[in-house]
Image (cartoon, rainbow, N blue to C red; front, top):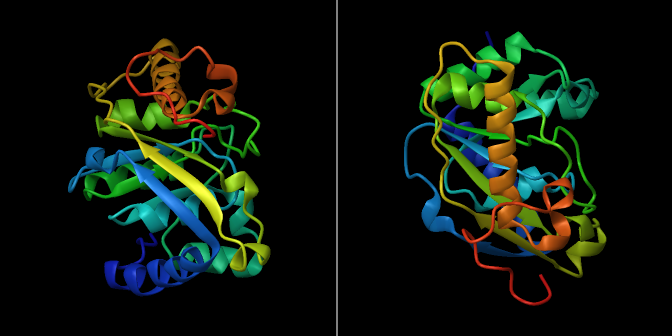
Length: 228
């Protein structure tokens, strides 16, 4: 079985080229970084606005992230080669992909950070879509803490234009969510955990980005400053 890219390979390659692009293409404001676990397994869960989201989150996150990405991206000759070299996990969306689930659990058992977009597709800045069950299944079966993060502004990213006009992007981390480990997971468990995860992401977002989760629980996160 292919192992994730080595730590040295990750930092010399992924972080190097991503950092270079971000330096010239974006102005990123990070909030809530104190919630990021310094060590140990966790599942990083984010809303998905634009194809730029994974590079931005990789850039701002202080630890290595093992991302799960849709299988279709691996079928593109050059992109697929890069994704495999960088240790991304291929996943068949909207179905039970046992191989992807197995690799995800292996990454967590190694104490790594698993990166997931529960919506399963990009929203384009039109608001959160309903969460898919895969993230909740992994969280419930692994008992790894779930770290919610919200990202917005990436819908305005346009390369190569942004190499001259740096786009403002916001990233906001919330407190980790703890789910007790379950050997047997029911559909009701998964539905409840999915709703919980998505509500935590929604409350980190400005109201106009919350989409179908516009009634997220209030009171945990301060409202976004004007204009955000």
